[in-house]
Length: 253
Image (cartoon, rainbow, N blue to C red; front, side, top):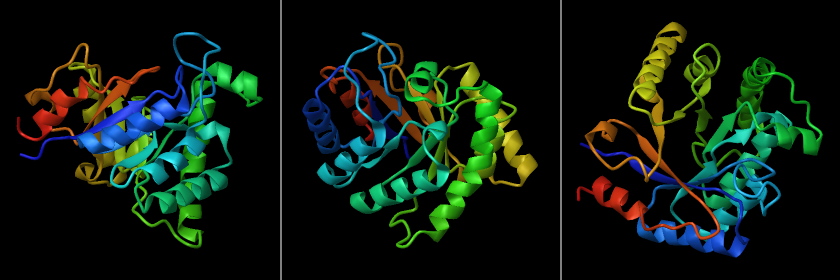
């Protein structure tokens, strides 16, 4: 049985950038499959006005300093950039990386980002409707760009909303991400399968990704059917030690 890929999400806050860069390179050397950051402008926890870095310029740097790992945002906020521009940014970083970019995307939720940077926050439903409007635009622009993306540039959608998010996932995504819970994750997965049936999509064409907490979860058979396991890492040090257990399990240890 092929076990899940191991991904790390480096929370780009409360740290010097050179520390983040070094740990990303070290993660690749350890054998991690994917490295993610997130798309916010202020820390999500800890000191509210602490150090924080922008998502896509950071990913361009990661694309230069790594050679093998795939990389992307978990997830980029659809509200923060024109969809045509976002497609071009993702394509450009894909070229810098040699075809390793994953375009993770969601509708957005962190109100302070919107308020401080002058974006309209609206309602959750409005933001989801905007994402549904913009996903076809992003995909269309990716098909028009010259040069085209180097790699497959898969789209990942994060979230578990059963009426809109999982429908959009069935319609547009190559990867679905949701946080692991032994009760809710299987249920959301089944809802996604039902949406796939409704829109005529083979559910096996969508890779399933689950975020785990190494303080609560340990490698085991309950994770064996997933396509990807994602571990979040916190600054200022981004301790990679807990990751080794998951890599050993992936590799049959």
